[in-house]
Image 1: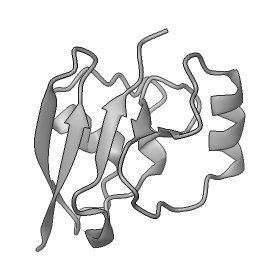
Image 2 (image 1 turned 90 degrees about the horizontal axis):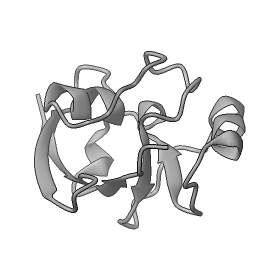
Image 3 (image 1 turned 180 degrees about the vertical axis):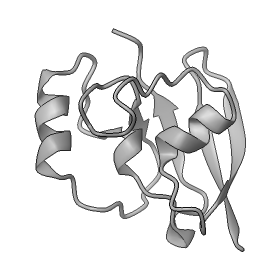
Image 4 (image 1 turned 30 degrees about the vertical axis):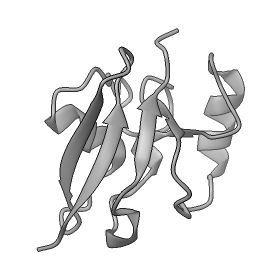
Length: 106
């Protein structure tokens, strides 16, 4: 089992270093919820709400944005060029050092 470290900056500007396992098929939203960060994930990771929107601050190459994620972000609040839905970012070994900031709640 290989854990990676992801830094999540919460809505108050506090950085949290999260250890995330890469062998459990988790996504970023689920890891944030494991650490009880204020990410709702109302839709359960189906890209149907934007409650797990975050801004990607590091230069990691992420998986391509799918149609559902693009459609959801086109209707969400506080969307920036680096916005992604945490539920659509699978935890993989090459994301070690990823840095994201939680988007404001609408």
